[in-house]
Image 1: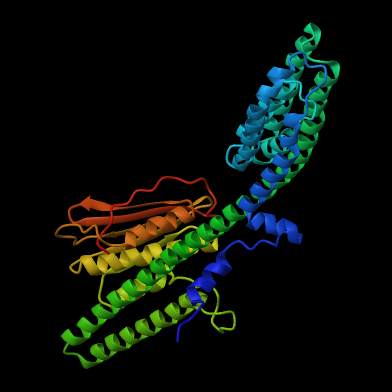
Image 2 (image 1 turned 180 degrees about the vertical axis):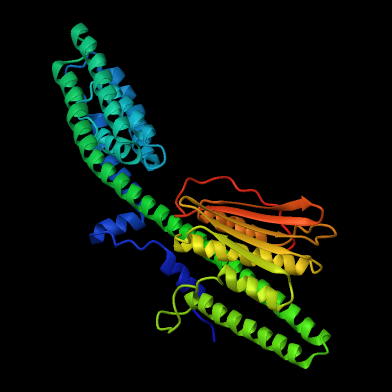
Length: 424
């Protein structure tokens, strides 16, 4: 069994810009069949024009010569009307042909005229531009008048012939230009609206992609901070429990590892709550990060010589408090992971009315410095978010310093940040 419409086709159709149907049965027909429309207009113009090639003014001074030119005039009329088939692509061609045909009719003293100028002026306004239409109208009237007046003065044409030529160009050209300017202006206005709507659809999709990318980066940072720190503490506690012969110490280490794991699960559930639907009972925002005091205590329970020194007031914005917790967590985790023989992990948090300074210093760093991690990179992104700075670099003698400075409100002017990424 074959399917006439696939699901992908339906999706693409829904994504397309939907437009209302054109009003009127005839207007929809002309819009769907442009070739038929052009052929019909050309035929009408030809029927109204070909007879004028044989209308000769009785006062012509050379009737025999005029009679001889009649077949040539019929050919020129046919070619001029046939140029209307090009009105959509190059509207200047039928307009030029119309003006030249008017001049030929004037010189050969044809009083019938041709409506070609009407259709050509309309096409120039609709498929060209308003400026081109009015410019062409002025040029056509001026050209016919400039030729008609000298011919009338020298007696080459009669007043009736000159007047008919000028009035035909003025009246029919003006009607075609006015109607074409109105229709063409509306057409270009609608096209501009449609183009703008398409641009808005593209911008909407781009904004959605940027928002999705930003959310993925945020989730990646949170996942890294939660998993990296918790697993590092659990590994250290598990190794300590396995190495000690004291059952009480091993039991305490195992209990601390379980508590750390439960805390990580709770925090991860809270962080992933933003991915659930609106009926989810989970909160829509992640929990606050682990306070620096809890991070240091977890490192101490794992057997690391971690210390915490806090000075000043802790009155900061929630965004800055979140960044402080993550900086301390990342610094202590990196020290536990990459400096297992460290004799000190010193954490200092200094609050002031304008800024907050965080330093995590540890020794025991040895071996090459990795650059493929994402921990300090994520901290640099957090620092940029609160308009702060962060630096992570060796300090000589196996020491490593992670230093960050944030404005207390998180709204100060942005400052450049530098980071040397430890393999976190």
